Length: 133
Image (cartoon, rainbow, N blue to C red; front, side, top):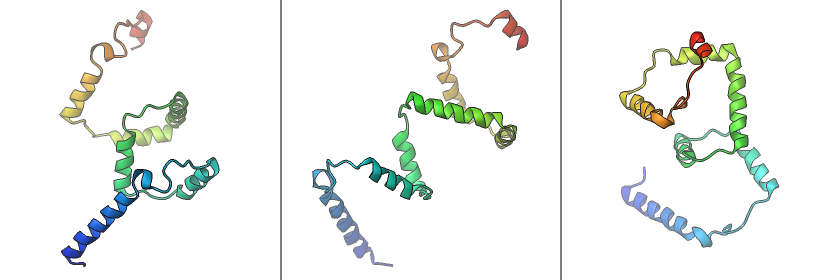
């Protein structure tokens, strides 16, 4: 194992390299990749496992990002086909049994559907629907 003094010098070296290639000093600054190059990079990276740190950073980067209508439709269609599969539904149900939300989560869910945020706000069920329920 390197001595702590060597680690400090190495960390400083890495920081300087990083600074030297940021922004306009980066050789690829302002350049755009062709569709073919982007496709090749995508194909090369498919199936590679991500580290936990990389997964966490991606999750944080995409939080709150709005989805296009097409993307939302694709997710909806995928989930609809999954939920039609009784075997998958049973597995999901089994995995959720015995799990409970924390008090904080329960409070957040409650706040998220209070008043005008509730999908039933200002609506009334028909008599027929009430009988069915």
